[in-house]
Amino acid sequence: MVNLRDDFRLYKLAYQHDRIGKAFVDRQGRLSDANPALCGMLRLGPEELAGRTVPDLFPDLPWREPLEPLSAKCRYEPPAGEPRWLHVHLALLDDGEGDGGGSPAAGILQVEDLSAAVHLEEEIRRLKRDADTLSRAEHMLQSEKLAAAGQLAAGIAHEIRNPLTSLKGFLQLLKSGSSSAAKRDAYFTIMLEELGRIEQILGELLVLSRPSSVQYAKTRIAQLIRHVVLLLQPQAVMRGVEIAVRAISETAYIYCDENQIKQVLINIVKNGIEAMENGGTLSIEAAADQETAAIRIADQGIGIPPDKLDRLGSPFFTTKENGTGLGLTVCYRIMRNHGGRIEVESRQGEGTTFTLYLPVEGRPPDISRDDPA
Image (tube, rainbow, N blue to C red):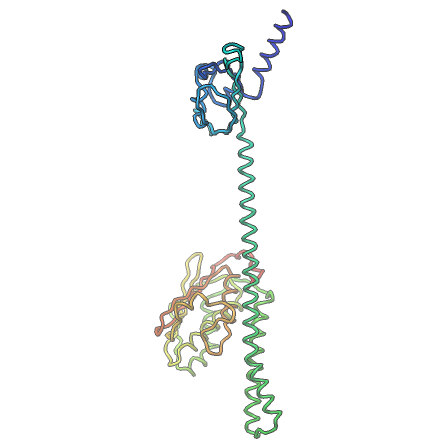
């Protein structure tokens, strides 16, 4: 008798301290004697659980009867707190009564909290999705880089092949010895021009490919623009173009490498002058607030078709008959490295406006490293 009492006491202690939630279930599926673990999982006290049926507590499970064997996972919404994932196991007990074969007299409910494991599985799935997404993005980036490299190589080959073809043709003519002295002089002139074109293309490619030494400093906008206008004024006069400088404050500054921004301004102003075949006015104005300066360059040229605006700055894309497109590529790169940007508006037959936005002060991030073109 003593041993039975001791065994029952030990069983009771183990039942009460078990980490698995447990309760007894009668023939109607009602709970009784729920242990603390089950009360904690369900966020309900022993009195609240007493008399509750298993289907009532876990309505998401496919119950057909109040008391039937079942083992399944379900989502449980407690009265307070976050939803939990539980594994519910209901086993039937046999009291030996009934039709000789025994009949289910009651059952025991066992519940395990799977929330941590489910959350871990979800996190693993999320990380796997992120890894898959990253892998696809890296693959796409690599493909885009290869495609860009292929386009660049094709562009280089095309741009250099044209003058080389001309050079080859003129050399063959000279080799034949049938050309007059005047024609030979003309051939040599054209050949030198074609060699100069190859040299220009290679020089612009070198600018794109190698990191350049930059020196950022506070620079007055008016001073930059005056220098560019002075440099390009003769070309403008020869083409019947008036350069009108408007509304530029002498106290407006930008934070930049002066030589690089001059290069950008020279390229864009020169393009504007060349776009005005019948002359006109090229206007330059600038304004600045506490954070950003805007330099606006507007020509009255032939304009750029809308379907070509988005391609400006791409290597070897140009709207000029003898252009390479590399000049604007360099401009866009310089502006990116300065933490700035270029916006373009154009109307065919009316002209094009380039607006350069640059930081007024402060060193933009990673400006010492050129971005890939």
